[in-house]
Length: 126
Image 1 (cartoon, rainbow, N blue to C red):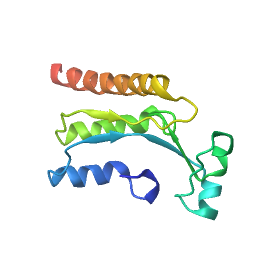
Image 2 (spheres, rainbow, N blue to C red; image 1 turned 90 degrees about the vertical axis):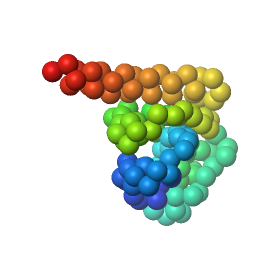
Image 3 (spheres, rainbow, N blue to C red; image 1 turned 30 degrees about the vertical axis):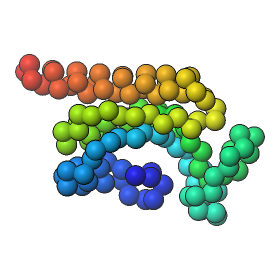
Image 4 (cartoon, rainbow, N blue to C red; image 1 turned 90 degrees about the horizontal axis):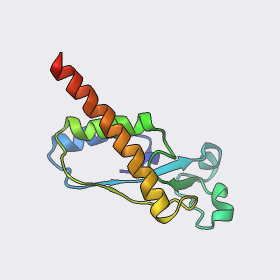
């Protein structure tokens, strides 16, 4: 589910989950350059790192395109609909390639998950 098509990601996930249609979670983040997107559309990618800001979209590792609060909403939506499978991180971040990007994504997602589980635990104890 692409971020750039105008619909709220969480709403779409909830709809699809209610149809029992989520079998795999594939996570990656983006930075959307709104000025360029307005001129060329959301599918104008630059593969050259030196020219990455000339494209309308740049892939980033999870948490570096949209902040932890957005990712907390996304992970919560998966949890709320009962998704308990693997969340796969795809790293196409040209600024943080390889293991560095994956490790940083895992750090963001682990912190988000811990905050969500802490909230669940504290409400069940009350």
